[in-house]
Image 1 (cartoon, rainbow, N blue to C red):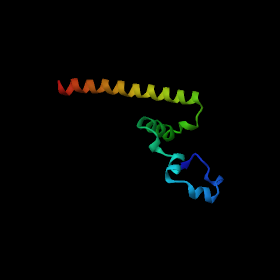
Image 2: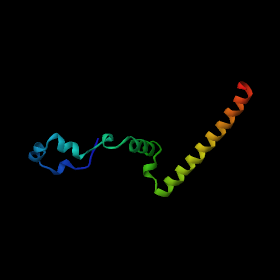
Image 3: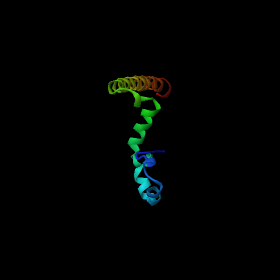
Image 4: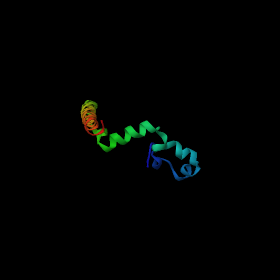
Length: 88
């Protein structure tokens, strides 16, 4: 869990006076993101896109879209042929 605020800057007396609500306001976790943001974040972290420049990210995403289109298109064609051959 990472924090947006550096608590080491506070002295112990101020830190003791903070409530749990104050601590939660500074905390960053997945609960502060909605479902789509969490999935995009997971995609970026899984494939390491967070460390790329924007143009590299766009290029990678374009290649992924083309590859997925190719897989789905040819998968549909093959399933159609299998359906014609064995079902009809």
